[in-house]
Length: 144
Length: 215
Image 1: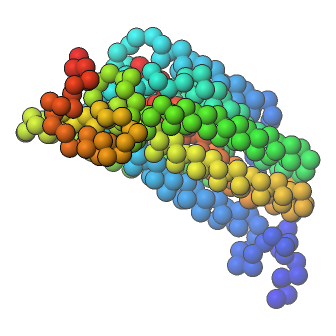
Image 2: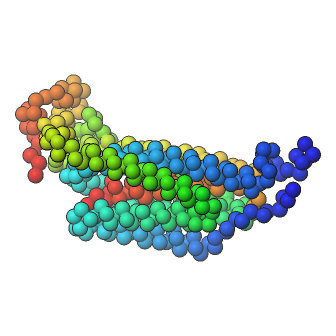
């Protein structure tokens, strides 16, 4: 029985930890800055790319995936693939319902407003959930 | 039985050596982290559906989020991830006091995160920016902004529970480190808690732009 420390523990230098931490803070600043610029739908893409970069840095260095047994990396990445499949297939459904029946394209209608009554009376709040579209929209500005 | 006298106290008898034990624990931890990703994944999926259906609400409602507090909390969590990574490094080198300092910093930073989160929640409770039928705030144009706050409280709430659990685990690690249970040869609980804490950080890295930086 060999009891001496024979495992291949990879000890990273402190400077590398500090560099990764600094990079994460810089990327945080970058994503806040980018959110104030107007790129239309690409704002979301930019924010997600920066978030994915930050998450990769944390996983590769702080969680040691870069140096550990690659089995852990396979587990981690496969869970992300399952998650992507889950979300993408769901969106194929929810985003294309209107192609068949326009009424189901946007399930949240302006008439569905439920917060038109003050909260102090619970009876009023309960009532407001069942009010007709006309009466519930008295203080509601039209969308657009 | 003849071998058991040679074993270090931390080595369970069904493992042939410490390295095998460490790898097994780590594999189990990663499988747990995968279930955590899928747990949050359901909420990320719900978020995607509602944001695709109500892009205007998410845009209008996110202006009522406090970006300064959100950014501060992101930095706090990133630094806490750094300190727990340094705590693992310190115990790998057998530096007990340094480990305690880094674990303590992580604990304090986690507390700061929760306190800031408390102030954000308190403000939203006060204004009536609450999920579903409890929503009473009237300052947001567009229909049904409560959808945004339902997702906000569900996702940051579940994340907050994870931060609380992380604080308890880190406190337990500090106690055990002080007792001298860990050394450069055995520090598995520190490493596993570190993995958990980094995952909590990764989830916040995604929650932050999704709720505070919509457009």
